Image (cartoon, rainbow, N blue to C red; front, side):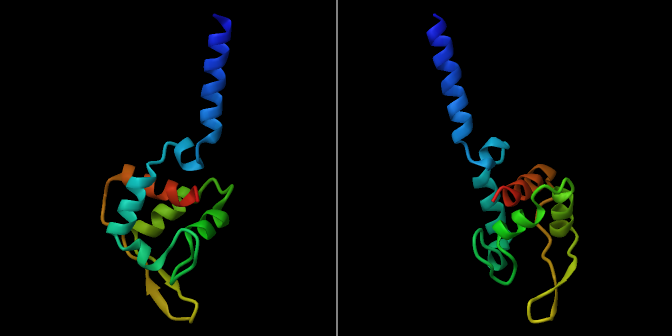
Length: 114
């Protein structure tokens, strides 16, 4: 009886350890990717390479350990701030096409989990 309980506990622990950071944090990666694609985020960003905008991995690294990262990124995708491109020109960030805070937080969580 005890061996079954221990085996079950070990299985649960190993499943948790093998999860990606996104799944461990309760992030729906597929929904985040779908929202990013639907809002043309992937025209300027990619997960692992810079395009017109920085890669999501670079963004996640920049904000790693920053308790205010979620709020900063939410503001970035919901308020259309201006930013400078590498060539020095100024552009306006696109506003995400949803008001659903759960979807927005999921997208930002996915970006920060890269």
